[in-house]
Image (cartoon, rainbow, N blue to C red; front, side, top):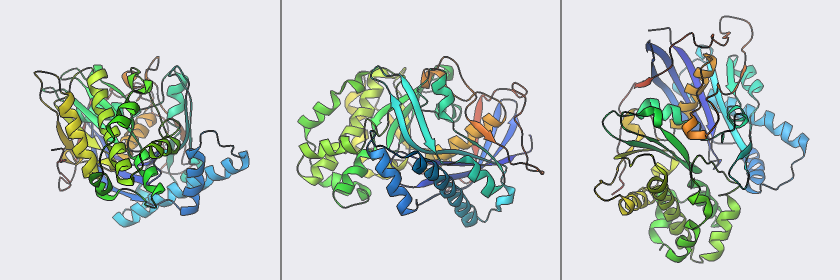
Length: 422
């Protein structure tokens, strides 16, 4: 086994609910196998004024932003990301000096896809130089543009991680992330090289937008959705959107399913609780229909992560929707939280980006063509070196190490829980 390195993953999703942090130790156990040990995980709130500023930009894709404001906010977001990481390290009793690498996704402020479904650009902010200066270690960031430049969607980028962790030789599986936007990775039994992934549509983003319209931060525990009734006519109209029928690869963001979309739904569904119920059903059924219509294999198990996992109403709706579209002769998928694999449900994306940063440092491609539709896999992101001293890391010679074929998650299994989709 090689000497392990400590890597922090940072990400803030499209819902802007918090900054997610994961600190992992990564070691090469044997050729082609990495072992990941989770050392710390948590989320830290955004500074309120900074969050409000960014939320105002992403709520309106056509908003005009002064270049000076964008540049200054880029630096402020970098500082907020660094502060979040330092807070999680302090809470876990980990000395920042022992950190070798930070992999920062940053905060997406724009993801542009043209009318034909081609990704044009994807912009994340959170200046990596600030993080490198504050933490004193190497930073990998700006992951998405290289895949877009290669003709890909730039999303979802966690598909390779999902495949390496959750592939099962005995069953077809899917890995679902319920963040601001929902995305899924489908991995055929015994054929992980045929894995595919794509964004399925809205998730917490529109639920949180509807909550703000009602003076709430979120629909805590899905209580408002549980008290409401789904407007089936409105839901059928929403699901008839041509975007859902478009075949993968495809990606989306708040430009498609953001505040304006939520406001339009709310304007058609008058009772507040019914708005929550209809938006919840939209997420659940769009995921189920995506698997029915586009998956390379019908999964017998769906691993679920992301903030939506903690919403019982959404998980029940998802279980119901999957049962409704299960093909004849097949069984409805088992829903299982990624906690059961040793990854806290709110931290999977941060852990995945820690892995992506590790691969970039080693000069290995980590995009999955079956997910993004790019012409070829790419080494993602750019590197901000730590500078002088023993913690300076350089890119390893490409091809020096064996390609990663499997990731094993090690560590405390006390987090392991199932997900009630009954």
